[in-house]
Image (cartoon, rainbow, N blue to C red; front, side, top):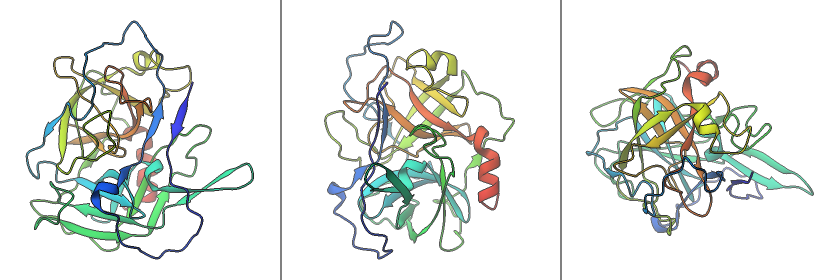
Length: 294
């Protein structure tokens, strides 16, 4: 099994807030897990991209969606879960420093949070932009593997006032069940092509079906798919799914967030035909409640 986690190496621990890189230089943060090649269950649809298989979302139809620019140079998504907290993936909000034989993890210096966006690369009248340095990463993140406990919350610097463009998403309860067979929506500003890491300036969305963990586990090496995860697959007639830069994005069934994007299959392409992996919200609902005001 090959697991790739792409984090920015940062040598200092200053909290200075430098200028953002130009939008074209901001890249997504991602975890890749190499699937089993040539598995009999895998479809080959002949399409080379992932959320380029998606469609442009209706403007402001996902008012809970947050764009996150980490340390001014990398990108993830998240969701507004209360007037004071954003939910996202842990791998989006960590930074690494390398010792002689160990990688030490700490939280990112700061995160710019963009709410109310459709075109994320320009300042729209609907947007609210705030910067936070208050990040809580799951205490057991990366124990024992990079995709374990991939969840974090960001406290906003002030109370977020909701409106037509900015709203709070409901979260799945601890007893919500598996959601197997349900169809949900994944939205994000991630790449539209396997061959480019460039982010989409406009919010894209796609419909995906939740599959059983047992089925998903059969497509990866043993031990990768665990109860704290869920997996989704495209619906077959319209190949699509997550790609570079979609990490942390909320996966929503009806009006309830059931997952947040954790990993995509393979670092040499988004591998259409393989399921993507999500942190299961119901599993972590007690942790979320303990670390936020929910």
